[in-house]
Image 1 (cartoon, rainbow, N blue to C red):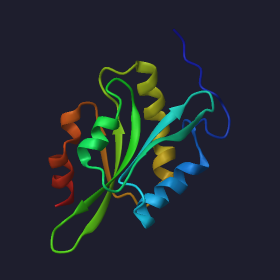
Image 2: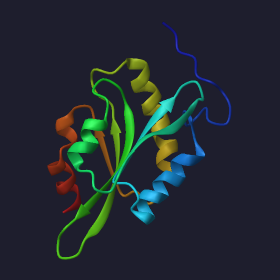
Image 3: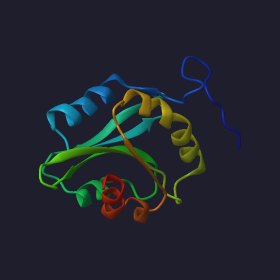
Image 4: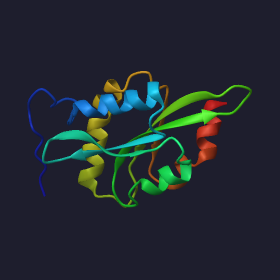
Length: 144
């Protein structure tokens, strides 16, 4: 099995990032229009695209159940603290389950920095290969 990576403007950073990814992120960050955004790599378009958004009333369990069990994804989750006054902490999660294909793991690993660059102002990042690595308690530990 051989892998071919396309040369060009995104060769060093993996896939391109679709314009609507940044817009959807800003809707979550500034307008609180979404609780989470799940991104996937569209190999036909050679870019990262928005796969799903969660409405503001959705829970962390809703978010984690929206991630595929056997495939990689990137996600942004708006974690709202309830200490004295509510504060929003936005997490970037690189979901790469151990059961996903090696090619998918490679594509997501090489494309992560490009997407992270587009989604500036995200302070917290979690790499998860297993659901226990991104349990709600893990997020709470990072924030407090």
